[in-house]
Amino acid sequence: MSLTQLSQEVFDLFDRIILLSDGHVLFQGPRQDAIPYFATLKYIKPSYVKSCEFLEDIAAGDSSQYIVPGSTPLKLEELLECYKASDHS
Image (tube, rainbow, N blue to C red; front, side, top):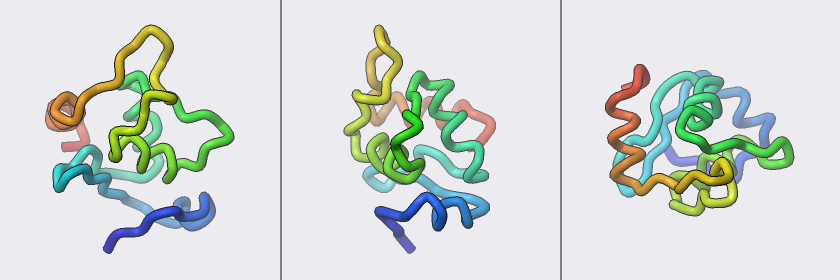
């Protein structure tokens, strides 16, 4: 099942999530680990952005507004490599 544009309250009800992009897994694991995982990749979620919106933007390749200043957004292939090398794969 695919769910998009969730409220933060509904998103917070999930125990685990799978984030896909072009059929590839970018993250799979406990919901509460997703935002910290992407922070290690230099993607920072602003407090005014819902978690699901932040994750959807990363999966869609529209994440430049979240990248730490001075860093470059990762390409899909790089995100996949990071996931495969992570503890979540």
